[in-house]
Image 1 (cartoon, rainbow, N blue to C red):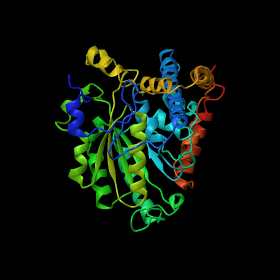
Image 2 (image 1 turned 30 degrees about the vertical axis):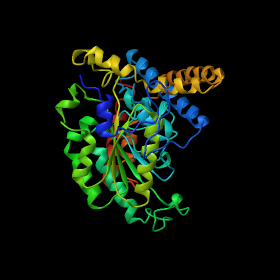
Image 3 (image 1 turned 90 degrees about the vertical axis):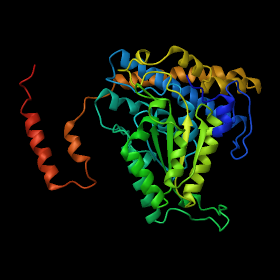
Length: 382
């Protein structure tokens, strides 16, 4: 059983870490978290509430209210740290597990439930949220992100306000970047490698964010690669960095820098966030059939929430922060339960209205045909 946090591994691979598993701040020669303790308390709030969202949705699925749920337990720091690094002009392309990123983009977590209940195909306006809808097809979103990033360049939304030394001259509001989330298993997909090629060839302003949670469903990481995944970036001609994915401060620092260089026109970058999927791949999965319990316990000691709480308590954070947060989490749980039970049955006719920005004659005809078919059943069912 390999330990990616063993000192020899950390020295060899330069795993960026700014907050140790026991809650001690540490320094890195390249990356730094520039926030104060108030900023860390805000990140801790995000972590706690994202975990509550995940736990509540899992419970709803177990009670038959959701058809499926993809847990993010253990990966909260990777998602919150990167999500809070995103700017208003950036756009995120998720898989189906980025509940923490959705939270950071201001999406009501209740909107995540409709997809997993099977009553809608999305739930939010991507343009308004700065985040695409969840992608079920493994790796497809990396191509979407690369194409979007190339569009930013063609539209002149990259590299404004930066002088010849790379210093910002107040142009961040006109600069944008894309970030594509995917797991370690997706790196074996052709789509991801094709996205790397296009991004490198056109210096696209895209950050590839790999959440290496060590398991592609039941396939362990060592069956997918013999070297750290971050090394793949060099083969495509752009930089990569390996970060402690359970360290929210380090993830935030690394993602902030990667997005900055992308917005300035310096091209793509790969981030490998080394984390662990503490729960099942989805609620239909039983990880106990293929995973050793000792491995899970090893990673439990590196819990992303526990290390931030340990730091805050040592720093003298008032107890009211923790008690108020506990109450807020309870209220969030109540909101999710009520919202799930109130989800309406879908109007399938809406599917034909949301394919294109402007309705086409063919789709209008198909919609009318469906409505006639649907209405033919009125009064015949009791």
